[in-house]
Length: 312
Image (cartoon, rainbow, N blue to C red):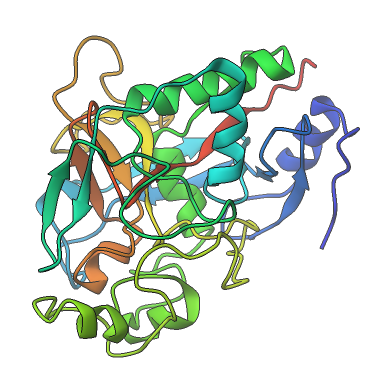
């Protein structure tokens, strides 16, 4: 494994990334940090991949089509989902007020709105090592803007949906980044499992294995980086991305830029599945979620990206 020190220039990184070849040649470059308060980042090589899933894939949903050939330039992505501890630094620095309520899990295993819930009180115990949840899309964007202020750049942002799937697949073409066997999920990530079904008997589509967590797990707990060295891309918590939700890939740009970013969006895209989803299909690399940008979930957090430019 090659380690990139924080002093590595963007130009050097860009040159190395472009020398890595296509996405199928999975390469890990990282991690690095731009500042003490910044998340660890991993450099992802540019390459080509196929976005979405075919109708023959088990669990395929219509909005995962048509499949699109996408070519992406190199970029960096946070190694883990943003943690409570990382978000707390932002909240303290800017005096962030909690978002107005959050959807939390009820005693019977259904989602209910709790006006008192927040990232500090999501309805279950967390430590600073757990992923932050209960954030609106606007708050996720505020965190990104703060990272840019801290680093004196304009390079931090949310991932586009295409970048997210590319980083999640890490060269794989199977339904899950680890393969096609949904019954192996507990080895790789935190999803709805037999332990969750014991607490919420109505969850009938959970995995038969146990991953050790009913709710969120500390980031990196499973120590299962994918081919790009990124962890927890699926499972644990959903992740906000940049795009407005569009129910087709027919309009997706070949360079993987975000869809319909300007104007009001009734729903924004979230990707990755989470601890509170009732079937393994939600952990597939191609699965898409969408939700109102103004209300958070206790299973929805964020991950950040950073643009890489050879001119630096």
